[in-house]
Amino acid sequence: MTARTATPRTARAINDRIALDLLAVEGPLTATRLRELTGLSRPSVSDLLGRLGDDGLVRIVGEAGEERRGPKARLYGLAADRAHVAAFDVRTDSVAFALADLTGRTLAHHTLPVPQDADDPDRSTLIGTVLAALDTTLGNLGVPAVHTAVLGAPGLADPATGALRPFSSLPGWHGALLTELRARLDAPVHLENEVNLAGIAEHRVGAARDRDTFALLWLGHGLGAALVLRGALWRGATGGAGEVGFLPVPGTGGMPSSLDCDAGFHALAAAPVVRALAREHGLTAPGDDVTAAETLIRAAAGAPAGEPGAALLDALAGRVVIGIAGLVSVLDPGCVVLGGEIGRAGGDALAARVSRLLRDLSPLDTEIRPATVTGSPVLGGGLVTALDAARDDLFGPAVGR
Image (cartoon, rainbow, N blue to C red; front, side, top):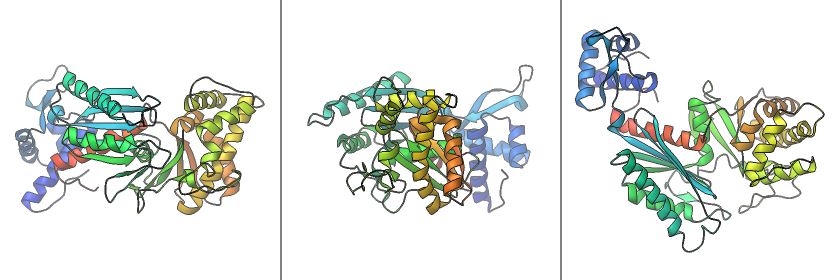
């Protein structure tokens, strides 16, 4: 990353942003290292650090090396407490949230279960519980305010209005929670489809870090895809890009409708279907559909040839590749990441099977990879997205993005 030449004021803004981005990516740096990475002169770096210190964005956070002392050893880092961001992962059975400081360090992570009757008229109780947990967490951390938040939820996140348009099968309290969060935080709360956030996480810190174009196929309670084209998330005209659960495919015995994806690709590889498929192979596991399917596929990924687990994985790959073939024929992304609880559990074993089958179905070279982001990729992608927005606001326009 090299500083650019421009008018004095513009040059200072560009160089400040380059330095701040370097500190965000590399962590604390000495002035000498900043000079090496930016190509700026010693006086320019000194002035830059002075400006950023006066703005409260950078501070001295330590020294480089146990034996070194003096100005040259000073480590400059982002002022972590200058701003805090939040991410929310809203499912039908739980609400999770995480908080991070300006450096991207996660400070807290909580998951709250959702009662089965959460969509009844008294849904305000559920929303109140979430808001109370958030307030308590902020208070315990001594965080006065959230600068930016991102909420990931199933459904269509309309890019024009910022509103959530859930499908008929999804609970109505998702939109109400979004409204209440915006009012309570008094800060921007951006809405994004949860699979899109998982795709962002894989792009920035996971399996697709080396790709500027790829698709993530989410295999979980439902099916979805995140599409990253030339480094940018593609949402579509109405926010519905990647709703592959509605993709008409052979083998489902019917056709999906605008309100119901049960006869679409969803019917081949969603968690309840995978659990039923496992039972056909004599395999069972306790828990809800997602937990059971994840457990069964993880065990199957390590099963030797000839065992029921291996046969289950073969059968699942034969179903998954049908949807991927359609996705590839339209987009030609060059890479498809298998994500979600089931895709991640299948790991390299499932990816290898799908890859072999895809070569027989498509003339397009497509690499199949398993997702690698640990923890919640939705929260991870949400924090990355929130940090980008907060840093753009505090640091000025991004360079090259």
